[in-house]
Image 1: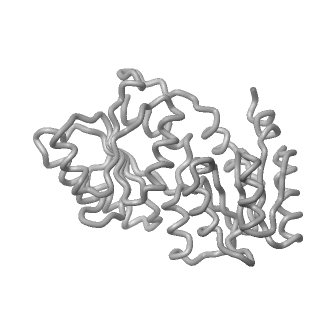
Image 2: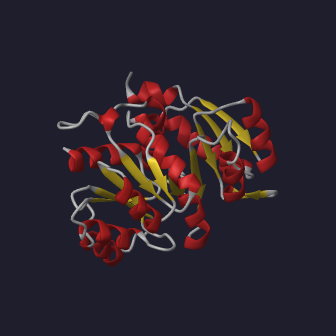
Length: 265
């Protein structure tokens, strides 16, 4: 199935309080090939729809009369029926503090308003990657035997990473909520890959990577760093710690697949 055909088959719930913005976003989705769009004006309406309707993707504005994208996503992630729901934010919000929690909760993309047709199409393709579950083929590894350690202080972020990995055929990883716990696990069992957040209490991702690289026992393990930091100097400092690859938060499955192929082959 081509991407265009697959995009046309996507079902989307658009949560946007402004009728004008609804029409603009639906127009952009239509231009990208999407034909199935349900709408909600409030958080309550969106949650009521999600009780009976499971879209491939929720596209949400930042603010509603009865909540925010953050409060909506927290409710979605806290309900077993919807905890894995693909979620994308469309907002003119630039305040990093407001966007950080959404990144930690596993949003698929954060698109600014106004956004380009290319940006929405890329986000829709990321949605396809999430739901298509294309197994990674690695030259020297059977992907189903990979032992992965996922380190992130956000339970929601860990769940998102685990879902992306599961879609690639990688079995349930071991989880750690910070670098200190990760080191304890590394001393107890063997791993083929570490996927770690950067910002964490106790021991952050940079300190964890430095600990891994200075170890005689597990310095060989590839490290994929996931960071919401966009500052180039900051990313350079992370790279110097010895990570094998750095991935943005929110990250796209295609990016993770490509990075895994590079560092594991």
